[in-house]
Length: 386
Ligand SMILES: *Cc1c(COP(=O)(O)O)cnc(C)c1O
Image (cartoon, rainbow, N blue to C red; front, side, top):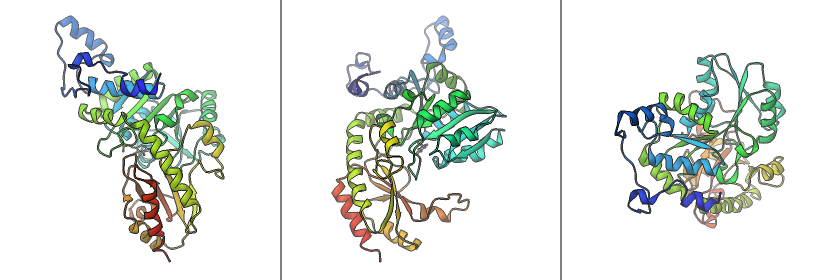
């Protein structure tokens, strides 16, 4: 399917709404039936009908159709946040007594789900270094039902070999989920590599403007419909029609935004790699990165995130560098128009700090600004360091 068709036409039927170019926000909680027979039919097949907005809503469906197509999936189901999609996907694949193998350094709340939430319900989790597929094989037990990936992964941006891990999962009859948020559906399509379920935080690249939150699970129709009947309808973490509309609007420009972000990021990384105050840039698309070849094989392009390790022994210098940046906002999240930093040094004061990441790691997200403007800002911040 053509990318332009998916973004601009798929799932839209303007004749239904006065030929309006922008789709309507169907802000209605419920949909009426004309007859008892109609209502009976709807109740029998609620996953495919418009009956109640905690189930389906036409504005949300439009977004789901586009996201499914972008991932090459049969079907997709949207949620009110990325973590709602992650949690529903994981819960759909486990029951008490099961075991999950998960790559470490996953998104922080995914880690909380794995380490604190699932064990309360009798689900055991092993976190492994995902850079070697054999670590997944070694961690598998007779009761392992799920392998969970996030590639590239939060903060370190290391990769898992998706095809190799999928093959190991298939040998052992485990299902597989990947959080594909960092790559975006434009730069990596794991379902085509054999993965079972792909999740995204739509809050990031898909929305792209740091205003709306959402999440999505993409996969086989049968699996998604089962999630609809169980996790989706009972947990109720739905995407509102208005937020679906904002995400649809963001999606219109996803290809141009990703192109700009990818090119600017390379330019900023090239600057940082040679800087004497930078010990290391964690970015799989650098030629001397051990996963460079894997990155080339399973992703079509880089996105806007990477981390740097500042060359310093002193946490005050990390603070000074970060505080000196004028045009990078210091914030969580990423994927919007604005460039961001997230210093690990800021996490050290939190009461249950569990990160084994170094204090001098600073995560970057490169937005839509002129890369020269950003490099100048970095230059003046570096110049403040002793
Ligand atoms: C932000 C993020 C999430 C969670 O998404 P929300 O929309 O904030 O709930 C999940 N995975 C990754 C990789 C993220 O960066």
